[in-house]
Length: 257
Image 1 (spheres, rainbow, N blue to C red):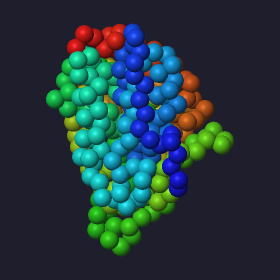
Image 2: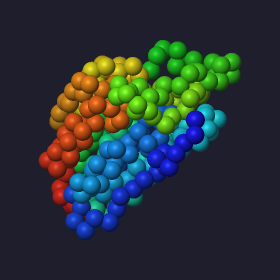
Image 3: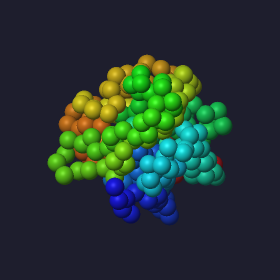
Image 4: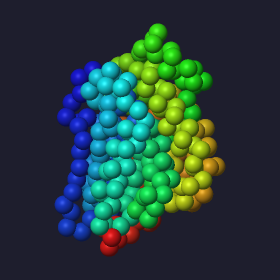
């Protein structure tokens, strides 16, 4: 599909007295477009926001097939380091694979003290068993039908690849396995938002996260949304809960650095 300006990286900086700094991570095969409502909402409320584009996304499926999960993680890790430099703890939020990346950042010992609170929306932790053979399978079947636009709200769509590169599924599986293995290292407060009906990520993946982390967890049910809750009926519910949660757990302005 054609990707619009909404799929480009986006940031809101320059508040004279920001509530804090928030890094947002989009999902697998998607783009910042799915996170722009969240980013713009929090920018209006007084947060400084960084919304990067992950490598291999919003270009071509072939580009995504050439990336590794370490490329995706490296991009958000660099953004977290840059956003937190000289400003103290930041917040990180993510959707789907972006939720897994958010948790991975909170597990990273090099980021200890730089992240004060996290929000994971329908975070992925598992993939179908066929993903175990995705690399050899990709030589026979390079792509499958896409997984974008799992939205209940009529007219809402996601800017995402129409086809899913099978090789990239192997990288997604590796990311989920690495993140799940280290969930016990997540000690910062977590807001865990889960759609009641999700055709992309099983809601039980959120239960895996809640059981695995060691920090405080607040659960938020999204009863009227499918996977892409940031574009769906419960978006305002999510954004209000996000703002309240971050105000409660993040020093105003992100601290003194």
